[in-house]
Amino acid sequence: MTHVLYCDGASRGNPGKASYGFVLLDGAGRVVAERGEEVGVNTNNVAEYRGLVAGLEAALAAGVRELEVRLDSLLLVRQGSGEYRVKAPGLKPLHRRAVGLLAQIGAARVKHIPREQNSRADALANAALDRRAT
Image 1: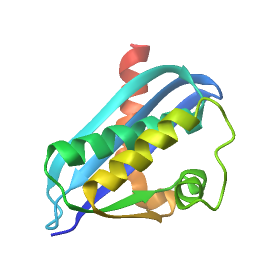
Image 2: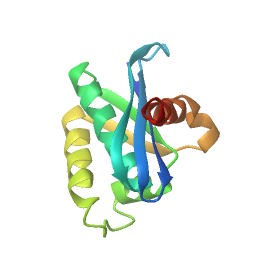
Image 3: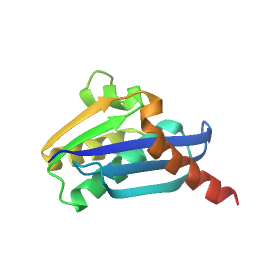
């Protein structure tokens, strides 16, 4: 059964206060895991990668063997496919970690989606920033 992982990052300022959100769904669309977490002062791209890594770790912890990752970050999708090089030093270790986690899952694919299809992960990321602000 294919699971689906939605991930998103947020940054208020770039760099600025940053966070990520992810939601992992089973093949029937039920939530297996979800999280929103602040990640300090970072760029949006770092926040996006942190969300991807956290979501992939959750998928592995849940025993997922077949996964479709859906991201609204074209940069992450293209860096993941090798179409774009990872140039920013702060992204290189996150990229390596994400690629390694994807390889551990086995059958995994990464797909770009429009922002409006990533609303739950976006809401989790923004809620993490809002919690920190209060």
